[in-house]
Amino acid sequence: MESNKKLSECTFRSLGINDDLCNVCKELGWSTPTAIQSEAIPIALRGLDVIALAETGSGKTGAFALPILQTLIQKPQKLYALILTPTRELAVQIKEQFDALGKDVSLRCCTIVGGMDTSLQTYELSKYPHVIVGTPGRLVYHIEQKTLKMPSLKFLVMDEADRILNLGFEDEVDKIMKHLPQNRQTLLFSATMTSKVKKLHRAHLKNPVRVEVSSKFQTVNKLQQKMIFMPFDLKNLYLVHILKRIGQESVIVFCSTCFSTLKIALMLRALKFTAIPIHSKMSQNKRLGAIDKFKTGVRSILVGTDVISRGLDIPDVDYVINYDIPIKSKDYIHRVGRTARAGKAGTAITFVTQYEVEVFQRLEHVLGKKLDEYPVNKNEIISLKDQVAEAERETKPEAKRIFEEVDSKKNGKKNKKKLNEDDDTEQSLGFRKKLKFQNK
Image (tube, rainbow, N blue to C red; front, top):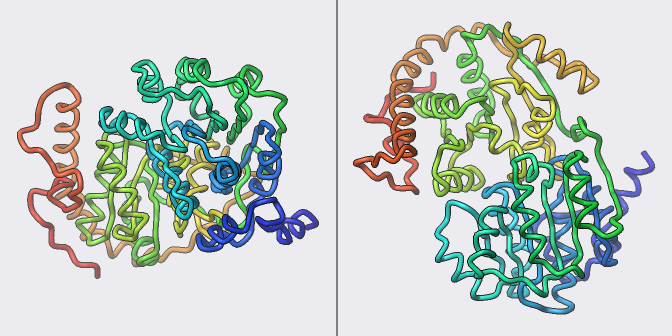
């Protein structure tokens, strides 16, 4: 109770942020600092290295972006800060945050990630941006090509450091470190303190101050966590029933495989829901396009794999639905962390079938509580049977065809028809014809 009172009394100005940036924070709707911002910002402004352990959705980007911008404004310099991220999507979102915070000071920020044109990235680097946000592999490429040199870099940030290392980027991180100055300030953010993260901070941080605002399996207070027990064969009926009840609110549906995301998204589109899939087999442009359409409200349902369970900062997600229950408890934490972010409320609903009871019981044990059951109307669910079955029959072959085309493309076979990367019509997603279903 006392810590909550202190947090409510805290302001960005009291943390040492200047008036101009405080006004920008207000414009962005950041009324008060989050717990991790309150802990990390004052330490970073003192010029110290930081190791920050924080729950997902805790406002980590602001915790490092604000100190970087404030010190940059005080002493402007090109190639001032480098932000390492595990994924391209997270890099794009961090850039968007920097652009929004630095809009009044002519901040130049660029993303250097895989899947994008290297010549265009070289051109962006030639303009000497203030902040570079990138993934390890592509940054190493530009360092080796000598198109990226950072001898005077002041800030290095490693966001989601545990994930960077778990994805096997240790060698790339080491190569990057060898090309950075020793007298930089380093900020390391991680969801967990793994042995690899400990090794990293011992090698590359100088007397860091550790701040921690979460435990390994903690969820935010304003998150409502629910479950539904159902027969495996009726999962789609339950999903459609819940989405009908939710209406136009924003929803992320998590599936276990890439094929499932596509199959379910196509089925929902056939039933006139504004759903869009996202998974690792999609091209980079399509993945970014899907996220953008969801963030702007063009599509209200995002169906994805765990590729979007961490890092993405989509501020207004009302519901998370675990269509497939995650095997690992920490993946559950990251998934449900897509909602109830930055002090807002949200709801997470987990589907549990007869085959997943043991996995679910382990999850409840780790969470330390029993999840309440989400109320459903079983008569309404059964009434959807014919409609959903027809949508499944029509769309499953199309999903299979699209996946075969993707696999053939990855194996070097060229598709005769090149799809428009910005197209989000049924034809682009794989429909040969428009399906005519009505919500009843």
